[in-house]
Length: 221
Image (cartoon, rainbow, N blue to C red; front, top):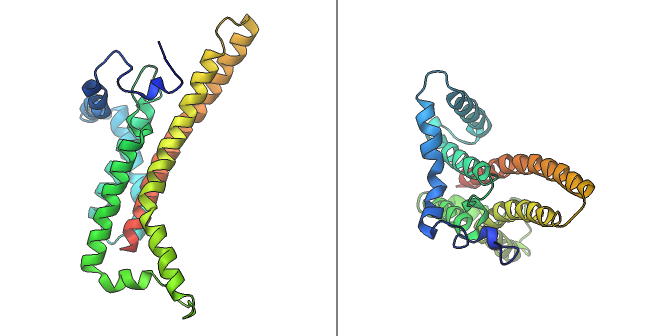
């Protein structure tokens, strides 16, 4: 039984322990990859189509296909966890700021270290856009520095907030059916089906946005 509106996002509120809830993040390894080895399986076809599409989208930003492995894995990891989170009574790890901020901050820190160590002049030049007046240069450096620092925060909050908002709407709609008439129950159920369709689209879009922005940040360094 839920004690408050956010109980569904608390890993300690379920029947499983917190360790099993966080281990469920890697459930896609058990479900997805064994099916990939079956000849012409649906999962292998879907995986091939998704990876080929992501590669075609991101390859103009990089010089080789080797750099695409990280972003393909990142996209599939977020996508499958988002989709698994749509199932009832499941723990959605990507809806938690601790998970999304850990991913975003780690990726951003790796890019920053690589850029400042190997392309120091380019990183300094990126702080001042081309054609900036001399008077505005100190302000542009401050603005670019702040915008660069908050990138992992915006990445993580965007992913967690979009997933959390949809789940909260589903919970509110479900609670509104208690002690209601048949007409209200039917109407709310239809609204939940429509919202679930929207949530499935959000799960795909947010995974794509996270991977796309990570690719753009990597291409700058």
